[in-house]
Amino acid sequence: MKSTQLPVNEYAAYYTPYINALGEVTLMDELEISLHDFIHFVQNIPMDKFDYRYAEGKWTIKEIIQHIIDTERIFAYRALRISREDQTPLPGFDENDYIDNTSANSRSIQDLLTEFSAVRHSNLFLFKSLSEEQLKRIGTASNAAVSVRAIGFIIIGHQKHHQKVFQERYL
Image 1 (cartoon, rainbow, N blue to C red):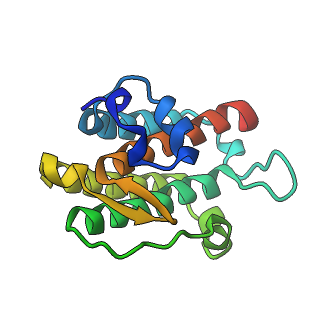
Image 2: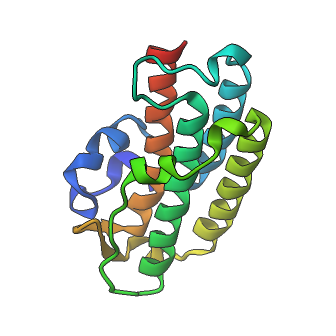
């Protein structure tokens, strides 16, 4: 399935910019392509930019990478539970609380990218293991209906959103 074919009732409206930004991609291909694209993109950022904040109270690039990792883990957990027909409504999370409780800025960029790669590879195995029926399953997360396949596309769109933020506000 292509991202452009994803029914809008399979995700909350606030995820529409993430889905629309993908263009016409397939889930499995883009999960892998975007992994390599992100690593290559980050490796080309000048070293002096990783701890830069473009305004008071804004996150550094290292913190944003940690946020991408944390968010992908949470979304993959949601996808797993929903794919297994767990109908428990899954709570949202406050990304600011998560960043406040990391040591992202004391980590090396290579360490962050290695963790990102490990998380994405794990999620590639998860999504590849799911049947078409499991990918179509819908559950509740953050008080909104969401399908497993939509979660996969949201993971990619979220990453691409932050790459764009890097380009526009940090570089």
